Image 1: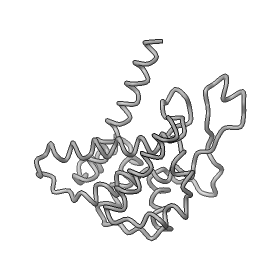
Image 2: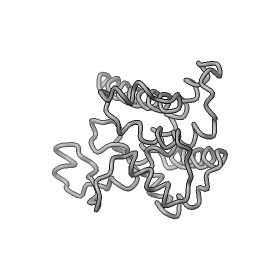
Image 3: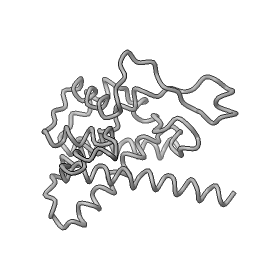
Length: 194
């Protein structure tokens, strides 16, 4: 991804959040602009998400899918656009603090592991770490937004959660699944052309 494209996606990300009522300056101050811009969304080349800017690209793609899904329901879901935007764009933001470039050349070149886990004092799932970031930045959430922030931390076999899921959480989960599916589809099609 070119630097110009990355900057364009970053500006869209910040603009969308500000339009949803999020104080982005605190987020930028806590995480850092470059870290937000250049964070990957995966560790390995095989994930299709191990490149600078992948996390931003994934979040913005998820937002497009989420809005399409809500529109398909013809207002049936009654999901506030600001709430949808805030959750979709921030439920992975904790990943900016868990990946670091892999300095092991052998791992990078032979195994395609371009990033490694950062040593953290705590073991938090992505949604939990994202909630921690939002707390530190003073970004408040409703109860439904809070639940939706953690939706990807729940296993697919958690029947109770899936039976009592809110429309917001379901849209966030579906949009994420579609975004990951798109990345994997593109990756496989590019591999088959080579």
